[in-house]
Length: 55
View 1 (cartoon, rainbow, N blue to C red):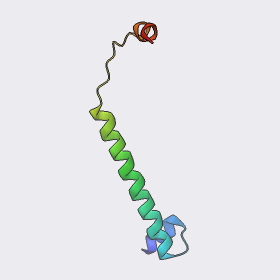
View 2 (view 1 turned 90 degrees about the horizontal axis):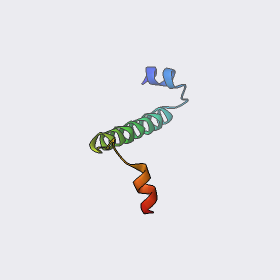
View 3 (view 1 turned 180 degrees about the vertical axis):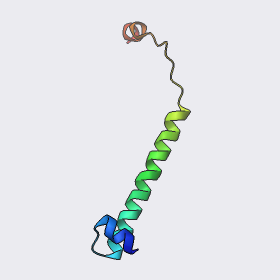
View 4 (view 1 turned 90 degrees about the vertical axis):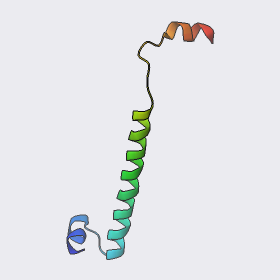
């Protein structure tokens, strides 16, 4: 905890925990987004001209 207080420049233990939880949530959200990006398969041969003419 002392190291976390020093590294975070937080004034209280509660503030250290809040920072840690914010970082945890942000990390989890990034991981979920990356997993979603990996699961989506993009096609390289999209014909933009046909897409424009149909709309």
